[in-house]
Image (tube, rainbow, N blue to C red; front, side, top):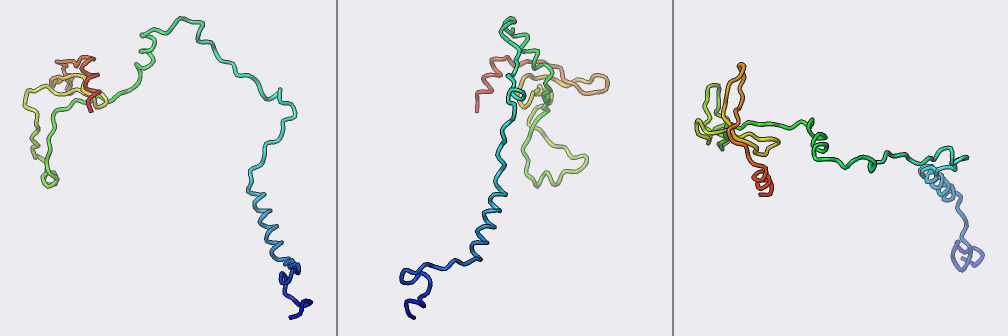
Length: 154
C-alpha cells in the first residue's frame, strides 16, 4: 500500500468519519435527554405562591399538667390477656390431640392466673362467672416499681 492508499489512521492520516456511529450517538443523546427529569421552571410571581406558615403559639397557655398528658393516651386500645397456664409438649403429642383430650398445664388448680397487658404482667386474679361469661377478679396488682423492674430484665 502506498501512502496515498494508506488505511485511515495509518501514517498520520485522518480517520474517515463513519456516518452510522454518529447516528447511534445522536440517538443515545436523545434518549438520555428524554430520561432526564425536567427542571423546575421559574414562577412568574413568587410572592403569589410562597407564604410563611402560620403556627399556633403553645407558650401562651399554662404548662401541660400530668392529667392533660394522661388524657391523650386514655383511648389507646391495648390487648388484655388472662393466662390460665402454660406447658411445653412435643409436636408428636400435639398431633395426637383429639376432641376430649386433656392438656395438663404447669399451673396448679386454684392458683392465681396472670393478667397481662400487651404481654406484660400487671396483676393476678381468679376466675369468676358474671352474666354467663368468664371473668377475672383481680387479687394482686403488680406495683409500678415492680413493673418497671420487670421491664428492665432481659
